[in-house]
Image 1 (cartoon, one colour):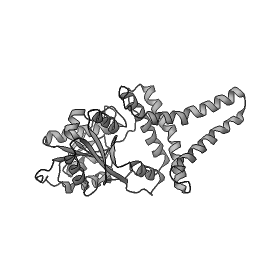
Image 2 (image 1 turned 120 degrees about the vertical axis):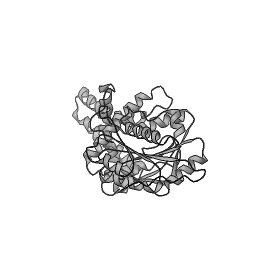
Image 3 (image 1 turned 90 degrees about the horizontal axis):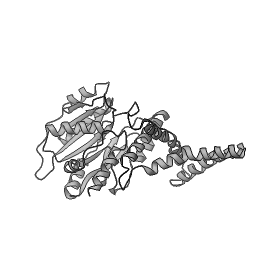
Image 4 (image 1 turned 135 degrees about the vertical axis):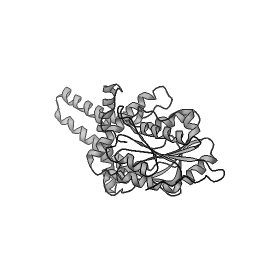
Length: 336
């Protein structure tokens, strides 16, 4: 697979480049790179210590391939920054960059829609669209991912990993924070908004994502990394008016720690083990409350609610791990 040479931009069109990140994505990376071919724009690939042939695949596709130094904790932010640096060194005249994860495929028409929007809206720093799951029915965890991507259309507080950025805005705010395990996009968007830039979610399909998440262990590990990232970003934005992830951290503390601790303490003080029944009762009520927000008469609503509550426990463990480490090092097994 050979990437075609970039075609000259149409008169008045912005020059657009692409940054792909990944780690051991296998065939998904090939599909991702193939989905960029019709754009004709230059591509850089930031690899996070893959042990497969990802770097070779990227180079054969015509991308600038950069290996992130594994001596430091691996994360998506470092991959994006490394890819963007390499892309801009080779193509200093770029005006826009589309970030895309290596397990995603770009959708037809997205580049035209997003670039036109950014050209028409001078204060918009970021345009993102609908990322959707390729196989939502393969597992409940894939379905949860698909619903997570479905955020409201219009002006937004943040974007996800797939998004088109205005490079002049990135130059002003700085790149992704390379020390964050997760939440690097909201943190960057927070800095952009503090500089009066805007973030927009467009009503258009953007990327097709292949989570390949079929086991509960994968879901729990993802929730753990999220909790670690929540705590990192919460600490990093402590001096800002829009401190990140306070709601998520508070929820994890209440449901995974405070509630059972209070009930157990009460049972011990009053010497009445029957009080422990309050824990499953409270959890059951919360699951019903979450399910009611969707549809009480659909079985998936209850499964969704149960997994959302279950995720509070690994999220809390991840957050506690961050504080115990005092931010010195990230946990192993970080993807991308």
